[in-house]
Image 1 (tube, rainbow, N blue to C red):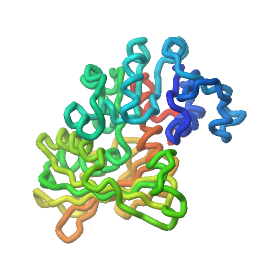
Image 2: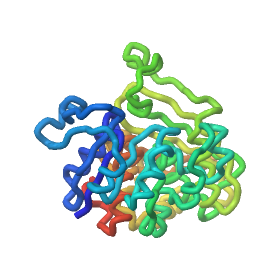
Image 3: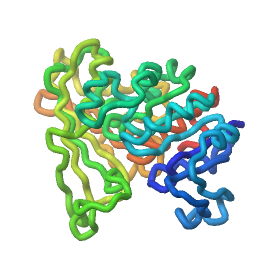
Image 4: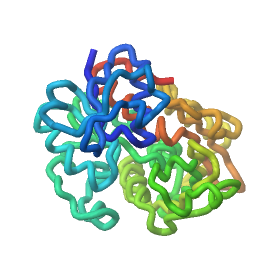
Length: 335
């Protein structure tokens, strides 16, 4: 058994982390925190947990956390997490961090899209938490940078092609649609119900900070620089991401060979399923699965990848990483 702390339980990813861990046979939630200055019953934050989790939400105390937890799931926003992670690591507690603060290895790129970084030393030791690519490194990591939701879907759809040199790397186009939970709980005009209901709209045009993350991992997979044109959209559904990935072939591959390539690449992966027909967000909702459909369209390669943005795109992948770091079967608690 391991003891788990969740830092920042008030958001969607905090709640999903609790839901997953409540059914985990070898992990116990022992400490939950938020930015509150007072102790709050968990049901006052998440009423659906009434009678299911007998813990209060407490103000964060690093020494108290270290006395109660082996691993911390850090569900804090970008630019905030790096203020907390060093103190947790210093006390010997492993961390899976949900923010972007440790994903980008190039400090100048991080600071271009976010703010000046206050913990560059821990960027060097952080392992990017996409198990399908970095499982061996995750096993021995003390700090795992949980991937972004959009990069998870796009990377899983791209890597088999990049690793085998099947696509040109000068311009890969990723067009993604996310459910409204991707915007978080913060109130904003664009996710106000009358504006989002029965609607879909692009956002972050030419500025979305997941683009550099995609390029970093895609370039590692290809062994050379990959340029990704990324455009996200938000739609009027709760959870899920559908990414459509458009690539120009670098060498010939038939539709059947494409399917065989993906099936072979992910044959041993418990959470990636390859289909010869279209995929959809409803089929992956509330699961840690990624459904992929590779296709040939007018001489081009198009890959469709669907995940739940809060599970495989956040909390589920974090628990998958936690399992690997702890030496457990990585599927524990997940579906």
